[in-house]
Image 1 (cartoon, rainbow, N blue to C red):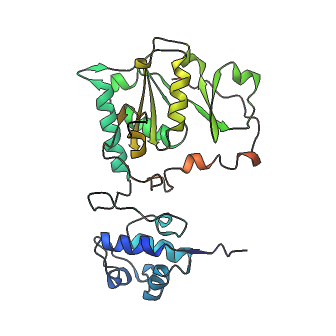
Image 2 (image 1 turned 180 degrees about the vertical axis):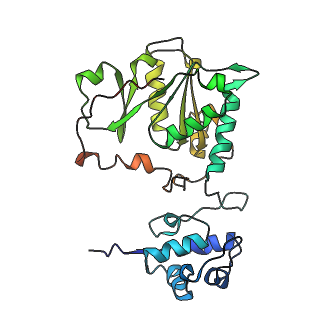
Image 3 (image 1 turned 90 degrees about the vertical axis):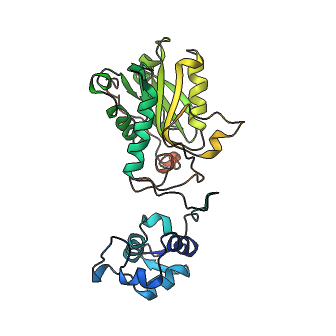
Length: 290
């Protein structure tokens, strides 16, 4: 069994990040990294740096020290993470921060509230990171507008989770591997509502496409739009159906990338990968419209 106190680093990712920030070995080991002043007990030894670049196992605390010196999260320099690709411009894609999300939220808000008129009647979002980004979007609107928008949250459940008869009275289930989406019936059955579905990232686009097909049974396509902060460029190809609103217009060239909450872009979806071991009935939810 592998010793969980140790992890292997991705040497290629480390050297790429050092090149990106113009850092030498001495910069890393002496703590001379931009605005950072590393205390002695947080410095990275030259032996640790060499072992990391060689892909040898390191103690987790040393991986965290090295990641801090490189201005990234520890997950980005682990061996089980893909190297950060270089965009056509020759620059490495960003590590997304809260400032990026705030900018994206501001841009989405600008699209749904134009010339003093709100372009939607209700929003639908999902638990976790998506609801965080949705909240940021709404708070970018004028208070008197923000407080009047009905906000609904869908529920994600495991693909083999059975919902109760009581739950089925309040939700429609949309199948989307590796999970299913429970959508509030109250939102769906009002065919005149202009609905905006707000997600934090759109990567595979699988959930978006299944939701589009589901809502097409109930309303005209012009009354159903999707918005996200970050969109993987594969969703914008001519054969694909991209979201109508993208908060950060520079498309992401990776499918997995760091987000402000400390995990990568698939953090929520990954929670349902081991669904077979966790299938269970859920308690009856509270009414989730505001």
